[in-house]
Length: 169
Image (cartoon, rainbow, N blue to C red):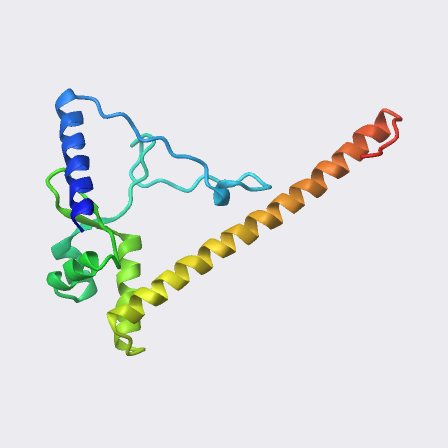
């Protein structure tokens, strides 16, 4: 718990220092396996006209999120303290809940109220769901790699055939 607070303090101090210096460099986003595709994907529509590279998404401070979810703000704080949800923070340390966070909180409430699970059970179910999603991504990546391998082999055969060369790979 102490190391989390130390990391958070370092991150806040770093953000404040960057603001004092004037220009904040954008954080590079590394490609993830689910960003790879065999076919080009269409760009998602952006809200808000000419806002540049940044996609606008719903973010809500704790009071608005609590009202939308019909939960007490202290409940949201408790869920964060237990690690069930991790809202982003402003420089002033205000919690900002994204639409994804709200969906996760709705899932937590459903598991608690409708399935009768305690918070330890909710944590177990959320971890299990996360592992299942990661496994699905790995399987999907494996399928894509196999499909790419088949495409590469087919194209190599076609090229070798066009050049009248034997294909012995």
